[in-house]
Length: 451
Image (cartoon, rainbow, N blue to C red; front, side, top):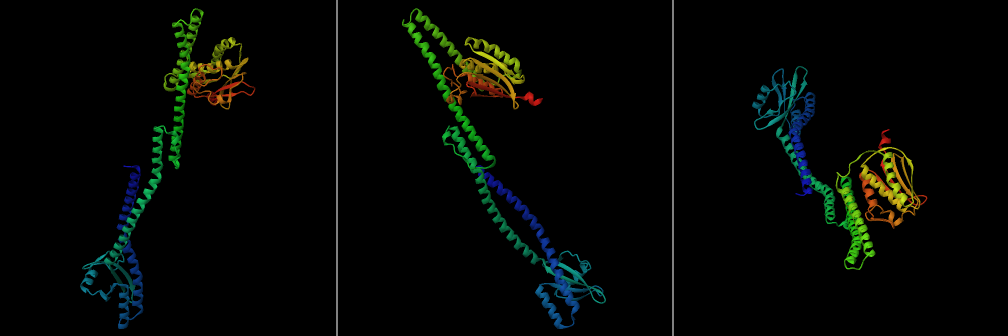
């Protein structure tokens, strides 16, 4: 069953239960309320009758007729009882036997009376004492319970009609609300189907609010990330095939030339040297591709420890200086603020060395390395005095197989970014103020925050 129908049934069922309970409660209390109200009305009418009796001479036929007209107008059965003489002074009830039975059965001095049982009906009773000059007398007023039950049935019928109208309105309202709620979810399901089919260009914005809008935004972000990942994978395979194809073609050309006798003597030896160099290059590319794949998919390959920055930078300098000397480049450590950072030392050493060797390769005469803390961040900076980074390259510099004019495999900076981000840091590249490239690796300075 669709969610929309489930919600509609749930809302309607809940309302039916609430209205049913309310209806039963009202029905059970309605008759008592009508009886109480009728007794209050009898008391008011009784006061008028008592005033008439006390103010008029009932021995007069005219006054008796007026009293009877008043009782007929009020639709009441009334009798007056003289408690002292134990006799009925006046009565509009024709059944005197029943009247005597009531007098014998009920305490007329008690104003709070139950329902009196007649031959075919029960009666609501109100007793009003009044005082003649000599003795206390009671005026007893009765009205059939059938009249109240008829009022009750009329009210119940109206309540039932209201109940049915409420159910209809509830169904329509719940259907409307669930449609408003479920429609964005249905559209969201279609969006997910488009993602499944990789139809990223057909994604549409969903008009929604609240948590559904947040989910929709998350789906859009996920689609964009997935699209970027798929595109990067396509570029990766295209670039990888190109990078692998070039040395393979070189190796194939020299191998076929030596086999066919085209290259002989020194040319053959030179060809063999080129083949060995290209094979080493292929090995390097393949090893870096494997490392990137492992960094993306294998959790056990990365083992983080608490590492002091100063000894770590000393290891970087030990490895960088020989490479720099071969190219007549000076590597200078300008500043080091010692802190403890958590990362995999071997992997981070490889990442930093990829950046430093890249700087040495592009520098004119010197490379500067500094470690400083600022704004609750530890920043490792590598600056060179080369020509800087082209603006069209700087935005995608850390993508795989993206390299500058003198780049090698195009994987070194991608590996560096993967390792830094796996360590909880960020890496960025920009052109320095005084020329040359500037690479920055940033980590949260947890040690400073704990001080």
